[in-house]
Amino acid sequence: MTDTAHPQNDSTPDETRSRLFIGGAARATDETTAIIDPARPSHIVGHAAAASPADVADAVAAAKGAFAQWSALTPQQRADLMTEAVADIAADRDADAALLSRENGKIVAEAWVDALVFELRWRLALTLVDQVDADVVLRPEPGIPVETTVTYQPLGVATVIVPFNRPLAILAASLPYALLAGNTVIVKPPLTAPLATAQLVQRVAERLPAGVLNVVTGPDANMTGLIRNEDVAKVCFTGSVGGGRRMMELAAPTLTRVTLELGGNDAAIVFDDAPLDEEHLDRLFHAVFDSTGQICMNAKRIYVHRSRLDELVAGLSARLDHVVLGDGVDPKTTMGPLHSAEQKRFVDGLIAEAKAAGADVREFGELPGGDLATGNFVRPAIVVEPDAGLRVVTEEQFGPVIPVMAFDDAADAVRLANDSWAALGGSVWTMDAARARRVAGQLVCGYVWINDHGANRLDLRAPFGGLKSSGMGREQGLDGLRDFQDARAVAVLESEVLAG
Image 1 (tube, rainbow, N blue to C red):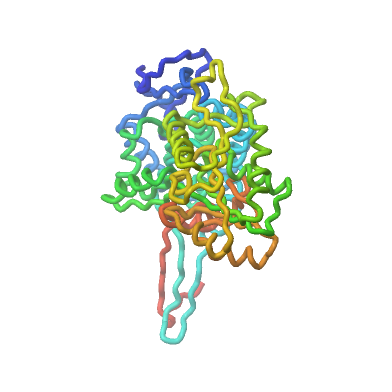
Image 2 (image 1 turned 180 degrees about the vertical axis):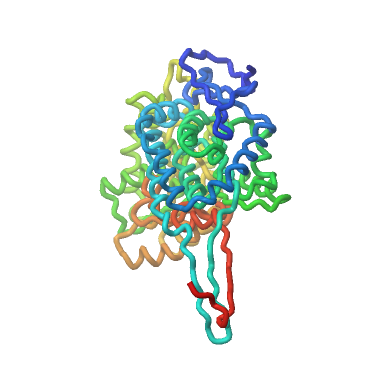
């Protein structure tokens, strides 16, 4: 067996190994990918099976073969099987979280929430069981002499591709909706952090009919068959804007549908009457710095009324003063490393550029030493009043750094918030309900929070997705369910409407 990644390592005997899961059976591969610890890049957490193009083709064939039987079940029958499949999923949550922390870098508490949200989203999806086949009947009207029934049908085989940062939670924004609608699915876990996802999904798949849920891991070069295959009806991808463009290119020859949940550059607008007490400052702090800033819907830009600028910066600074950088599995750690060395270089570059431009950059915490000295750690930072053209403002940082900019005019704040390539989420901070509703309606994005922000405050029943370069399509809720269905219209002349 050959590793497709070769870091200098100090591997340990407790390394985790994951396999593919295709057609109801686990499958080992000749090659594997070494998964490294972001806190200790010389250490290997485990090895993931590296699927070949033939393995990928087998996964698509298995999903296609299972589709007829799965889609023929009633929604309630599918829901019953899906309920049973996660009946004891919580029993492994601690182990799942520990493994995810080691391969991702995030602190264990956040990894535990990631695993919890998988189950919560799964069970919430099942509450829509009565909507799956909820026909809509259009009665005859003057000039329209037909009665038309609109029905819904599954698409077929769906591929779900998830990123490293919140793989379990993000997976459950689409996977259970796809299955409940009657589709069969292939899950592609993240290349650099696949272990916890592959193992959890396999446990679920083992309790569903063979071929209904499949898992493949491995290098991106071998995965084009998950998209560019006439038997794949839908691809649901979460990742970077560049990755989304690549998905569309791969899907174009076969006209495979895509749902894309891509990057964000969320703006938080903090008005002069904003609540900045301890509770709300805690909310804003977590909205910015959870998962070391590596969440697409984190707040990435703060526009604050000039009268509250110093107060807000002081409030965030007081919290950053207590940040402890370290290994995510260490209970004393409050902020882990960035996931990759490449991302560390990018974020370090944003901070260096801001300093060189004369911006007021305030850094916090201490970089760890010892065996963590080579880890992907970045000191969290606040950049106060940077020039609007700096990359720390215009690009998605995906790290623990936040630009804070003052405004005097509300209309100007909204204009600045909307002046971005991104349109995923945003937030409005004010005690004026009318202002909150008005400004929320002016923000160009897919989701708006009031006096709150971030992934942990998301309504898991509501549709989620972005505009502009932040993506297309919606996940979660009834809209997310319908994204995995096709509508069919059946019409009959009024004079020939059948009885019964």
